[in-house]
Length: 323
Figure 1: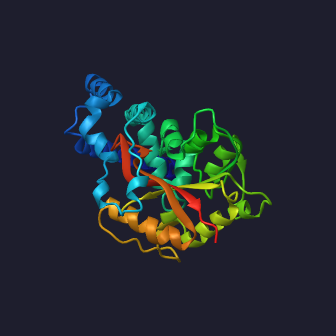
Figure 2: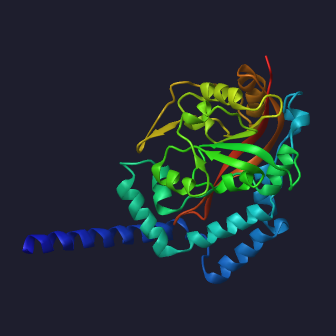
Figure 3: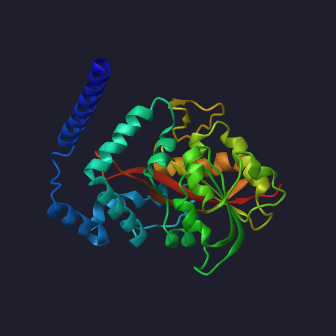
């Protein structure tokens, strides 16, 4: 009995020490920011007004057309910070301020991190939602009206379905794939969930396939693109693809990261140069041509250290070229 009590006390002491460490780290990390209710309210008001949010957030959308190739330059679509993006930022800021929730998330991530993927941990906790584009930005890229409807959408690697919902409003049938078991559970409550390879063998084709920030996280990216090409409705089918730039491919297996079996070499140092190389070399190699491209922030809900995380995305609308 005494041995059990000692183990319990040691475990409790470890948990309390862990929490104290996290609180100290958070204080050190965020010391230069005033996180009082008044300051938070002022910051949220700044985010809600694009002029005040201005300089920092508008860098997320900036493109130098002169650096794009001649073929790609006229296809660039300028995007801006809009209401849906502002709303996602406000929600992320609010969640980041929930101290005990963030401590719980951090503790679970530490315990499960060596065993399962980050995506599965987020699915289990119901956190880490992503934001790629708003409804208005999606419609602008595809050049469709709000009332436009297609037959079938396939969202590959759909995560928790947050971005699927934006696109799914325009389709009568919505199909998804995902490898993370917790994320699968979220998806199958709303959409038709297909096996990781099943989507290519359903006997029908799709009006739109989305491949959002997946190209740099899969083992066989070129093979994936060829499969998408075969699975689109001939003539009218489109692929909407987002890629984080600079392009740095890694594959997560369990809790570990490793290089993919098939390597895509993307040349160029600047965002515009890599967009041009992807358009002229990589996509053409597998039978696609660019119809539209824009620069958008790839946003993820934050944690106890940051209100949200931002990566630099290039979002393409690709048209299959018939051989």
